[in-house]
Image (cartoon, rainbow, N blue to C red; front, top):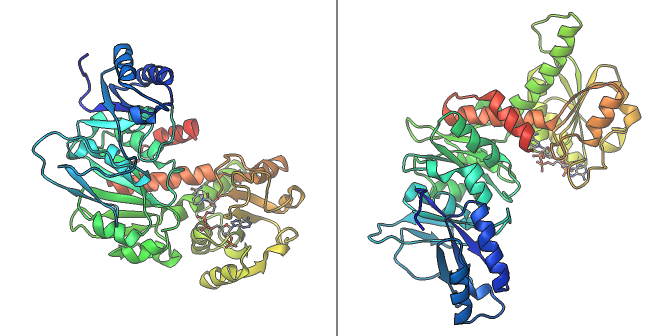
Length: 434
Ligand SMILES: NC(=O)c1ccc[n+]([C@@H]2O[C@H](COP(=O)([O-])OP(=O)(O)OC[C@H]3O[C@@H](n4cnc5c(N)ncnc54)[C@H](OP(=O)(O)O)[C@@H]3O)[C@@H](O)[C@H]2O)c1
C-alpha cells in the first residue's frame, strides 16, 4: 500500500467493539484517509487476537496504539512543545521524524499547521464528528487542503472563545485557493488576546479576525488602530504590517452593514428614478436595537452618514452610554414596540433577539414594522429571521445579516491579502454553505 499524498491524513479511530472498528476503517477510506490509527484502548475489551484480526481485515495502512493513561502528555523528542500555561507552541530542532499530536480544542492547530512546520502526517476525525483537537477528515480534504500548505504559507485565523461555530475557515480557505494566495485560515481558541498576540508574534502569523469576547480588548493590543475602529471602540480585524511587523486594527463590521443598507436604499431610489450623491441614510431616524459590538459599529456608521440615532437596549445604561458617544438618544426597550415619531425610519436589529435557538423571537411585532422604510437584521443564524420574514410580508425593504457577513469578510480578506477581493466567489460560497 503506497502513499500518494505529500501530507498523509490519518483517521484516528476509537470504537467499543472490533466490528465497529472494521466498519470505521472502511468509512475512513471513503472519507479520504491515507491510513488509520486504531486506538485499542477504546475497545471495551481487547486482546492480542483482536489486533491480529483487525490487521488482517484492514483496508488501509494501520498504526496500532494503546494509551496506558489517557490524557497524559508523553515525554519525547519533538518538533513542537506545548507550554500548558499559555497554550504556546515552540519549535524545536528534530533529527528524526516524529508524530506529534496535541489533544483538546487548543491542540487543533497542531494538526492544521503541522504541514507548514514539516509534519508529514495529520490526524482527523471520522464522519464530520467534532472531536476536540481533531479536525473532521472531510474538512481536511475540502476546507483546508493541507497539501497546499508549505513553509511559506501565511497563517490567518479567527481569535475567539468559543470558536467552534465560526464560519470563517469555510469561507477564507477556499477564497485563498481561488486567488492562488498561499494562506491558511484556522480557528484559534484564545482566552487572553494580549497574551496570544505576545506569544504568536512571528511574521508568519499575518492577520486575525477578532470575535467575541475580544473585540474591545483588541483595541489596546494594536500598535495602530484605524480611526473609525478607535471611535467604535472595537477591532474585528488585525493585520501584522509586513513592512515593520506592527499590529494594525480595523473594524470591517461598520462599513459592511452601512454599505449594505445604503445599497438597498439606493437601489430602490434608482428604480424610482431618483439620483443623488448624498447617502440615503443622511437625515433619517435610525432605530437601533442592541448596544453590543455590532450595535456600536452600526451606531457610529449611521452617525458618520448623517443619521439621527435612537438606541433601544435591554441594558438601558449601555444604551445611554452609546447614545452619548454618537450624540443620539437612548430609550427604554419597553417603548420600542410602539415607537413611531415619523415615517421613513430605518430599523436595525443588532441584538441577539431572534438568533438560534430563539428563532421565534423578534424585537418588533409585524403590525408595527409598517412604520419603517427599511429593516436590517444583523442576526444571520438563521438566514431569514422572523423579523425579516415579517418585514417582507408587510412590504418593507429588508437587508439580512448574511449580506453584512459577506461584506465584513470581504473587507477582512482584502486586508489579509493586500487588496484581493473575489466578491462573486465569496458570495457564492456563503450562500451555498451557510
Ligand atoms: N452579520 C454579521 O456579520 C454580524 C456581525 C457581528 C454580529 N452579528 C450578530 O449581531 C448580534 C449581536 O452581536 P454582538 O457582536 O453585538 O454581540 P454582543 O456584543 O454580545 O451584544 C449582544 C447584544 O444583544 C443584546 N441581547 C442579547 N440577548 C438579548 C435578549 N435575550 N433580549 C434582548 N437583548 C439581548 C445585548 O443586550 P444587553 O446589553 O442588555 O446584554 C446586546 O445589546 C448577534 O446575533 C451576532 O450574531 C452579526
